View 1 (spheres, rainbow, N blue to C red):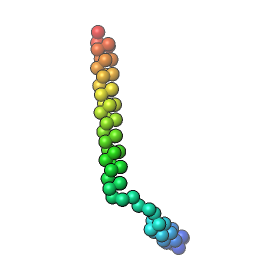
View 2: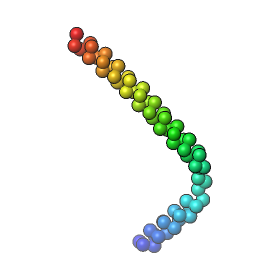
View 3: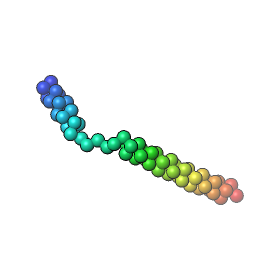
Length: 62
């Protein structure tokens, strides 16, 4: 059992050495893009939620 675990970690290390890692600048750009899109969607969905809540409140409390 221990030899299988050791083999697994050895093979994992070998595979990670073959990975073509992106440049630091690429990672930063993509991370900022994801954060920006997430914040934009949060603002849009929050605004829609506010408008629907406000509209339904006005309709219900008439």
